[in-house]
Image (cartoon, rainbow over all chains, first blue to last red; front, top):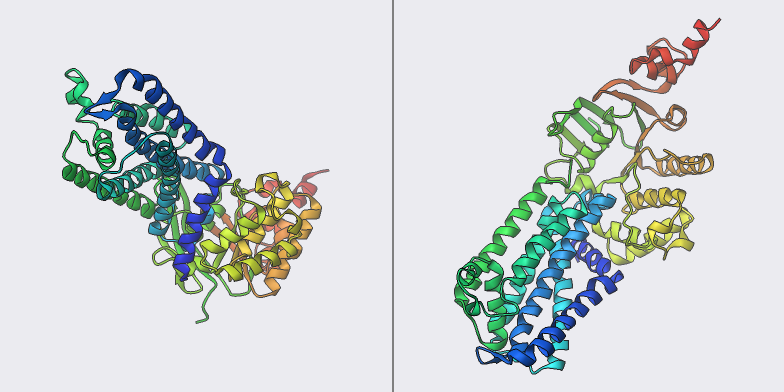
Length: 255
Length: 256
């Protein structure tokens, strides 16, 4: 391995090591939360709603839950890891090393991505044991999930770098992401909403991500798949470029 | 001309708040030298160190470490520097051994070399028994030793010690002095900042005084005292930072 590869592998290993050391909090809690959603919305509501657009209600909901767990865990990992390291000063050890801004950004990004992937993967396995979950369009599902994970991973990096206190991270997660995800159609179809809420939903970027993942699993979508994929790819690339610029400038990282 | 371990030229650092922490600092440290940088709080010592190690971005001037640019194409310069910061900045999630192993990984050291060096430094700094303990459980003295071991992990040619003995007891201070002298004798160049004048006097080959972001005097301890016509390094320091009235010899003269 070259020195650059060793640097990147170590930076990435540190990120994975961090969340594995507190896995009750970083893996266990999100899994329990998702299980509770499936129980409440699947067993309780599902017994009354039965089907949405010809799809069993619990099966309609699960793709959104998988996307949600990927997104929130990718975000939470990076935002809290970066802020914690800034708070402790431990990030100085990485910043004073020969690692380039790209190596640092990729390592943080893949750390959060990995946590999101593990939680989403375990959610998928657990859901598959409970219900008959199809995978209709794997060629849409895999890139969509990966893009969602990478997008929220970048958003987590951006939030962690900008944050000066833990409240700043909690604010984004509680007051921005959670409402957007819940109002993005995880638990319902936007077509069931009265106006103006149906139209408003189309301004929510999470709505398109949920539809991409839902299409990958059950083959149902309310939006254009190619356009949504294109928009998500562009948004992820822009966010990555912004973060790379911030790391290169040392924004709120170097004095 | 012989290549300097650290060459700083007209270094300036102005923070976005408008504070000028460094105002045209120039400094040369020769390979193998143990160099002391002394100055009051807020004089610019830590800013100078941060600019050298990439933790702060200079707004003017140049820094070269063993001939390598430390600000533009910084890879080789940072590879040559080890930093033991003033404030313990250990990662709470890591164990003692992981702290050393990860640091070496950040500097591109292969696994087998990391393992060997980790064992060696844990032994040197009497931390072997603590190798699997989380860093947050260590005592203050152990944290200091670990920070010094971490700085040395990738075998830097220039070791920067920012107030390594601040707030430590006498026993640990002497222990750290012993380590510092040994590392220096083995060929590592050392830049040491300290508040303790006797520490600088005992350990350092040459000393520079920094005040209000400028180097206001440099030389050996004896040279500085002679140049300013005073009896000791302490008096030279007080004269240079403009606090002559605090001199103990001055107090003895005016006291009846």
